[in-house]
Length: 407
Picture (cartoon, rainbow, N blue to C red):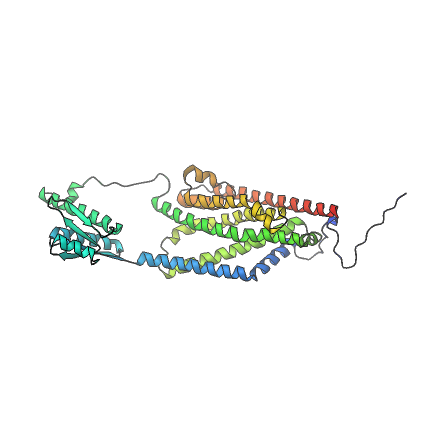
């Protein structure tokens, strides 16, 4: 008759992972909260994390300042003309149009003695272009190597206005009477043209922020799981807390860090916009920004869960490069939707987990959306995140069981 002798744990030694997590004493913090705080503290003390955050803040502020500089920078064009009152009048009309509605584009006419003299001014770069009238009554705009689009477009419009006025006067009428009834207004059945422009801008910004946060924090989660597996830290932690709590803590900790970083980026951008007096469109983007923050949170939870699952599948950090291709495809899909999607493609994308993080806020900004639609999209995203975390838990548990059996 064989007898089995129970194996006792050594004093101070770690219990076997097969024995399961120990029960928590009453009054202690939840395990997932301990892991969450641990993740936040480790990342907050990471020098590379701090440096990357500061560099990104500087780039955001620099981008806003550069954009404000380009918007406020005026263009001064010099156009050479013959001693012809008609050409000078066209340039004067272009100057008036360039400065209308607080514009900062000016046109100055430089009178030359002849057509050849006007061309020589352009060749000597003393004039940006020459506006000449041919003997047959046609007009010619001459540049040195090219004619700036700002010059050609405005001179063309001003020339049409001038000729129309001259022909109307010759016919004994006015340009306004000739154009009476020719006004054309555009309208949209859904949304507005202004909102479409805002949706384009917001889509680019939202996509970029989501892309950066997903790459930076997603890889950090996966690498953290892999490193702890290599160091057998997971096996030790599994004896004290459930694997599910461990994954929850890792995902929540990195999500908190991502949200804090996003808030810093948004605050820096808003401050720079206000200081440079370029915050005119911010008020219209704020409603969609609120939805974006909510969808960013849920979308990041899904991606964090996916990265955690990838970390549980990989045996070493090098394996992540092979396993991360599907996740990168999802992130690029979200970036693509934010930049290019429209119509039914945008509607379908607004219900797909991860991609909806960018697609639904753009829909909210671009056209009227019923309240149940973003709420339904959030429910789908949350369900996907929970399901993925269960997959990661099962995978990590299976790996530990195999190691215990193999001992």
